[in-house]
Image (tube, rainbow, N blue to C red; front, top):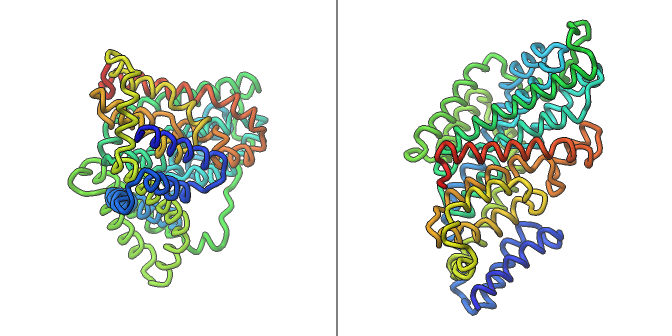
Length: 434
């Protein structure tokens, strides 16, 4: 009975989110609470929800302060010299242009926002593609691959996986660093191949620098916030924050590092208290929207776990999985995780589907961390730039002025290939046991 109630809860949750009858925030709170009350848990429901909220506090704190930190140093112009150097270095050779596009998108996506990555990279590079007559689908594919492969600790899928499975981000992310490195090699290899193909198609391999480079436009308001004299300070500060988080993540919580980093960045770049307040206000909306969803997810996972619905579903599902195949669950999930982005939005997958898979795997002796890592190799990481369920996909096709179908047909195989390569690398490197 409890297993059926849990299954019905997840079906209703997915239906409400995917049909857009409820926002993810509302569905993640209302649906599990309603199910718990129907299951006869009464006032215990509030305890389940609070337990879930407590477990997510460090994750929510890290996400909020990471958004504020990267927003602040971007406002200060830390990335401007890097962007300008890339634009100057690529020249007018398609191979360099595509690889430069990939590198630029990779750097811009350090803040974890696909929308910001596309809004900065595509307008900066599109004039050069148009001047040379290069295929705009190549531009869309290059930025999609760079953003898709960049699943950093403060990106949405990583945060969701950590929250839904109640695992430290360091335990999910650190073992995947060499896997992500393999993915980056694949992405830049594909970028080089796409550029070479464009050279052959256009006969532009011998083109020099006769075509003038496009210039990036910065508004007067943005220029007033720039702090070019603090470029190296901001770079060193960022390296210290990220390096400490990766190397000492078990001893120093990432949330603390981003809190301290934000305070230092604000005091040095914007000593005026009023300017500090305005910088926080400028980025608070994005941070608080995601924080609200994460806290709502805490209610969902807390109720599902505390009530025993999740465990009951897993115990029922265990009988359908041959014991000899249990160890292959992470590999199988890694191989299908990218196409799942076309079927599930990130909230419904990470908070509705992933906990059930992890619980089933756990019943068979497979650690939940491997299941979470497998999902991160594709589900709304490499998959999000082509998924019709994410606004970022429509931003890519809109900025590049191409059809959605053309973008998906051209880019899907490349992103799927990256996901498969990383899954294989995870096996070879011993991240996933066979």
